[in-house]
Length: 371
Image (cartoon, rainbow, N blue to C red):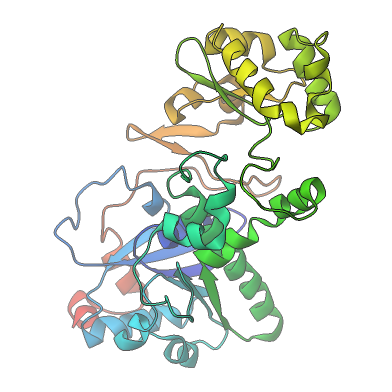
């Protein structure tokens, strides 16, 4: 069930964006077989492991030749493989692209790393902030004068990593179904997070003639494009970029007779002052009061909600965006399709829950597969 029904993905379980990519593909109906390590928690419930949902789990010790052979047998009938090891590790395990393509020439071999498969940093450890720091994404994600900080995992791991890997895998599968040739997808978070900047770069070019100096009127510095704290300590965000939406906001805030605000978008020398005045103005009401006044209008307004709060918002409820499975809040599959709905969410399988089932499909017993 799902738009990717019939697609088979082998995932070498790891941390972060690789499993997220596998979850995304499983959410859309792919048969994702996650090859997991024989850790102490085999068979134990793990409802919090949301990125393992929708997958089948098999436990194999890839340090043993028989286990490696089992993976290669799974590869023979797979559309794609996902791995997130440092460059060279899969080759040392005997599961590199050349070996896998010898078993399945149409296989799309997806490699998820921070730095990519080449360059001076490929063997260096890193995390989201490191990759986005070098790509330029973290610089643009933070307003001038503040410490550069992005939302945890979203900018590099998920947006610049997992989603680009998913697109690459699906594109590779489409190509392989045309000409039967598999290939390697080199998805690096430093690449993807830089590619994400193209829209912002285009705006900066229009606004500043291509300048990137801190403190210049970039999208992150405009007083009408930021979050403001309210009387109760909560936050709201406004983003009326287009002049007619901006005019609507100014009218509803009661500043439509103040020519400084009316012409504010066109007077950069006043932006700091007007931003400070708006900051004080938003502190006169609570988040709920501002929401009652501005939400649902063309002011381009929204309250800043936690995931728990978001789950109770009428728009989120109407879309069925959040669900609680085994008392764990998680977001439903996205995007949505008119003819092929995604599978219903169920409990996260324990590590190794499908070991016997998958081995039986290969005609193998537990001992012969594990070595």
